[in-house]
Each structure stands twice: as structure tokens, then as C-alpha cells.
Image (cartoon, rainbow, N blue to C red; front, side):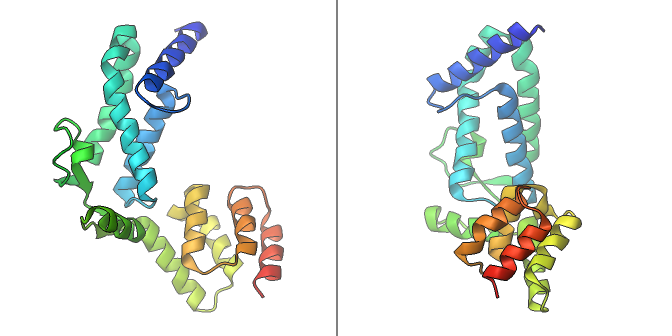
Length: 218
């Protein structure tokens, strides 16, 4: 496939998503990666907010709507795309087992069903929003609880964060997840939150982190 063919496909793909209400440009590779990431998050116990959760379900809804028009543009490109999406679907269905939103279309199982388990904060938010209980179980919570235990044993705040990164804990694998875990493991003053984010995203060194935390968390 030539570069021009790829570019044309990306433009058609993004245009169709826009036609069905999706804001912003998106490529097929981005959609696959986002759905794959969502699937992994759900398998590990969804650690984000309901807004993030619903955005990803909306992404899957839109992909379902554009699948048929996309096949008219290029069956060659749509087939491998959907194979990857369906592979994630198959994995996700092990977590999405309970049909609770019966008003949703029958072919949108991801909308009709609720996850069996997820992180504690998500479970609370989900029950408050929909009166549906989800079992609290998540790798995210496991790591946060472990961080709290170490801190309770008089571990230094920065030393705990450095340990999590050095040992490549689950929460350390993505900046957003790591930042969320740092916030959830101990109360942090607003003055240090920006510093924590700059550090987990790689903009500050370990030395700079320690200096800033010691200054703001005496």
C-alpha cells in the first residue's frame, strides 16, 4: 500500500467518524489501540472514571456505525482492522457478563452489559450513577494499597514513588495511572501536584522531585 493510499484511507476513516458525531480527527490505528487499551484496563480492573469509560464505549459504538460504509471504501483495510477489534471484544466479554442495560441495542453487548469487577472508585461512581453494583477488584487498587502500607510503615514519600517506578509496578506503566496512584495513596498538597505530574511524565528528575516534595511536604 502506498503512502498516498494510507493517507486517503485515514482521511476517509476520520471523515466517517466525524459524520457519526465523533469530535476530532482519528485514525484506524488510534481506534484499535484505544480499544485494545480499554480492554486491557477492564481485564486488570478498570481504574479510571465513568466519563473515560463512556467515551471508550462511544468510540466502539461509532466504529460499529462506520464499519459498513468503510467496507464500501476498502474491504482490504477494514477486514484486518475489525479482526483486531473483534479479538479485543472476545477478551472483554469475559469481564462484561451481566446484562443490566436492556434498553441498549442487542448487538451492542458492550452497552447492555456491566463489568463484573473494577477499581473501587469506579465501582462507587457506577453504583451512584446506575444503581448497579460492581465488585471491587483491580490491580490498581492492589498497588495503591501496597503504597499505603509502605507509607504507613514510615516510608518516605519520594522513596515509595521511586520504588514503584524502579520495580515497574502495574501503576507505573503509564503516567496518568501513576499520577492517579500517587494521589490515591496519600494526601498531597496542591503545591506539589504539578511537580508529581511533571515527574511521572518524565519532565523532572528524581532529584528535582525529592527537592520539591521536601520543600512542600515538611
